[in-house]
Image: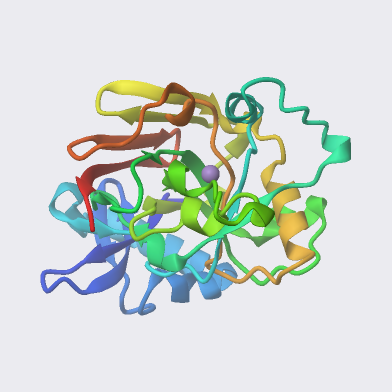
Length: 298
Ligand code: MN
């Protein structure tokens, strides 16, 4: 079967269109659906049709060179973005400043939400909001749900996954503590939500094309300095356990994204934060690379 990646690109008028990456070339699939979300809504039916389309395109040498195409976030407006907190052992240690005391038999996954309006695409700027002076990076392996999932047990969880992408869970570290609201603990909205706080992409790799996602390496650079370097196998709660937990509370819908947590190597413990002129680059083996410049925003 010809492999393909599912993407969104901007045509010459700047209009978002769904496409496939096949052998380094981008082909348009707007005749099949108006968006990648529309394809994912009926993923089990769409995937074999897209695979056939990819095979024909590869045989014909159809498409544009990737370098000539402006990619957008693979899902412009994911219905929901669920983010796992403190879900790599090494990251939990660095944020706790010591042993985080994680005993899985005594714990369940921990999630917060990110607004779909935080999403930007590959190459788009991360715009530092004026309300924060401590904006930090978090490289994450992100799961895209492919069909409605409610009360899904661990052993069936992967049947509900359409594919995988990369998310940078950009975080305003100084907006988490709320001394003006001591009863409320951490302010997860302030910490995690501002425009451009969710760079996503560069595309979605169908789960059927990834033999073992736990073996994938995940790395992040700020400019030339490697800051994070781990593998998905280091997740405390794995993808299936996250789907089970979430789907007992909410129906997971096609196109929902679960960003599965970040490994150690964020800036906060070192007192390093993003500044205008930086470039953040995340790489996950077999998925791709997501790079975003940093600018001062409003
Ligand atoms: Mn995170």
